Length: 332
Ligand SMILES: [Zn+2]
Image (cartoon, rainbow, N blue to C red):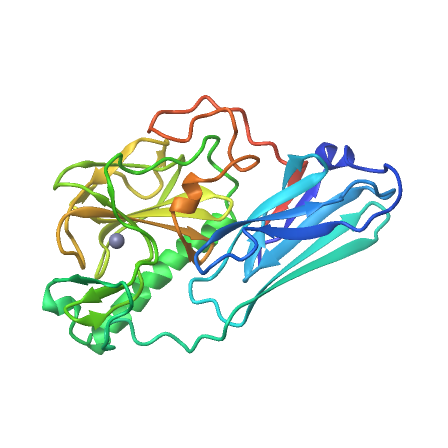
């Protein structure tokens, strides 16, 4: 488990003022659905005679990286699992100079969900689901070798997310769209392939013709370039602090693993590889191992991205540096 300690100047500023008051942990939005990238806030952290020397937290199995959000607050991103069931819990320990600590806990309740059906095998049509025609090779019940391949590819993608939790934030500007084209399918909309319900849509689709450019949504390091059964030719970019973006169905990738890409840099071309009805870009995102709605990245505000830069376009924002609450002294 990744732990991140925050020590030093930033946090020393928010010490010892007035009467002792318990810090408080809250989440925005207050009722986040599966796949939502949330904002966790610790407030009332000052007004305490004992200064804060560390903040370590975890939600849904993923570490939380708290930043100084000003006004006596620390904030971190956290994700709700797509298949959320029963509850999601966040735990945060705020360490004090005296050696004492405050343990903060937040619990969100959800309905119990039965485990999801096999992704390609069940009948029926979800409400509002869209009917699509694809190559029957993708809708027939997969053989065990194909199932094993898909699971292995999912594991590769989850690994990229886990490594992103160990990587410091590599971006200093807001996230931007990977194409300026129209969104043709949003995150989470039900899908029907040849009359069979498939998994919900875990990304955002952008219109595109063969060979149209695809741009990196933000600065990062290319973590995976591969050909997947469902996603076709893929590029995954590790942006750090747990965030990863993925670009599917490319006709060709134009980057290699280990490349540092800038926000707005062309990383590949639109194609129709993998399970598709035609050429388009499927854009995905993760927070650690958890799949999130990539549209939530576009909505990020301070302290995660600077407020001065524009959030649209593919240009390089001349941004102020993200303000971290002290120096991360232990990043494991
Ligand atoms: Zn898609």
